[in-house]
Image (cartoon, rainbow, N blue to C red; front, side, top):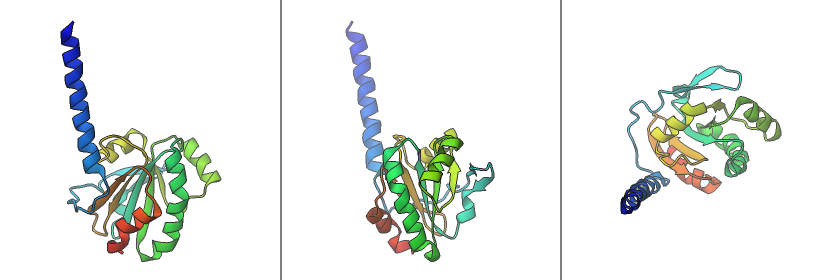
Length: 172
């Protein structure tokens, strides 16, 4: 009877180690990571048209993974639209990757206007977020790329205006 407890304890310790690693490495960071194909991914927009993220190379790209059912996601979206208006001419480009259904995203956009591209991630979006450092699969999750496509910061959870500005300021 003691063996199942030992196995459970080992599994729990393993999971805790992975979680601790993920939290330490998912905090907003300014460490540059080589592109190694990080922008070599495509997702479809709401009309089904595929868009490759390299389409926005040359801009400061904030890729935000979100869902309509995620309360923090819903709260940060209007601020992202304001930032897009304020800094778009200086090269800032937000791209939302919804881990959600097309119909839900379309309905959400009717109630809360979004002035930046929104793509549908499906399961591939969650896999891509994981490649970028979202090891705990949290939403929202944001990744910031410089004009050369180099990942410069990631942010799990809600990304406030001040945090976005801190992440992009030196890149403008």
